[in-house]
Image (cartoon, rainbow, N blue to C red; front, top):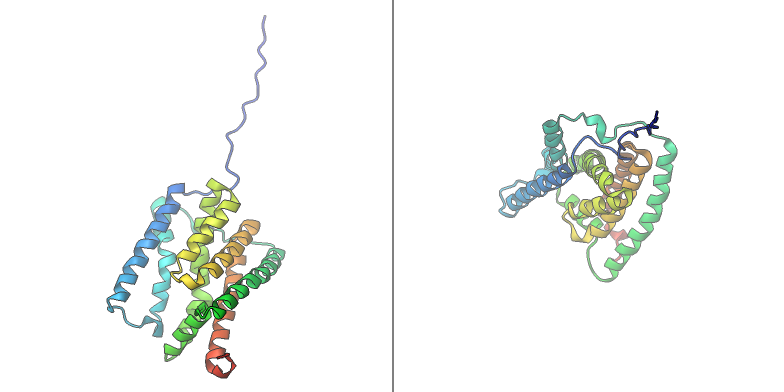
Amino acid sequence: MNLEIQQPVSAPEVPAYSVPWKFIDNWIGVGLLVLIQAVLLITAVRGSMPNIAQTAAIVLLESVYILPVVLIFAWRRIHWKHLGFNRFEWKTLGLGCGILVAGYSLILLHNALLYFLGVDTQGDAIGEMLAALDSPVWFFIVATVFAPFVEEVFFRGFLFQGLRQRYGWSKAMLLSSAIFAIGHLDPVALIPTFILGNVLAYVYHKSNSVWPGMILHFLVNGTSSCIAYYMLQNPNLIPS
């Protein structure tokens, strides 16, 4: 009698970074973001959009980054927890701070080069915006609190995670950071935003939590806004 030795059946492999949405959903989200921004840009160019930076309506403008996620998650019936609202180890935040300092050394070199070339930096643009406002209150609220929250949800919690499942973390980091930079619609800030995006994506990868990146993003935007406002109030400190 022949006895066949049965080999154990291996369980199907689960992706190392599994997300409950489909890969195509990432590009649908990017497409929706582009479409919404295009509509807002056309409206602004035609002059039919009021100066919403003066009011709480600026919050609605920043909401375009999270709207694609809301629509896709509602369509797929996905719980928001999958975006990475998890606990994290505080040492990951320390690692992010260290990498951020290194990244800002490159950003400072970039800004110095623009200065010597006579090109306005992102800080100059922020200063001009603040100068045009009657009160900077809503600008600071959005820049330091709301913008970091919605941008981390979309670009790291949603986009980076989805791309990471398909391409691996390093390629996903570069690609999501490039989209993050382009999505800000500011050619001068393209390189600094790309560098910041890589830092935030790496921190997300190490922690699998959206919170460390949000905290770093809060600090970056808050510090930049405060410096720009301080320089605006003390123009004699700006070299002519």
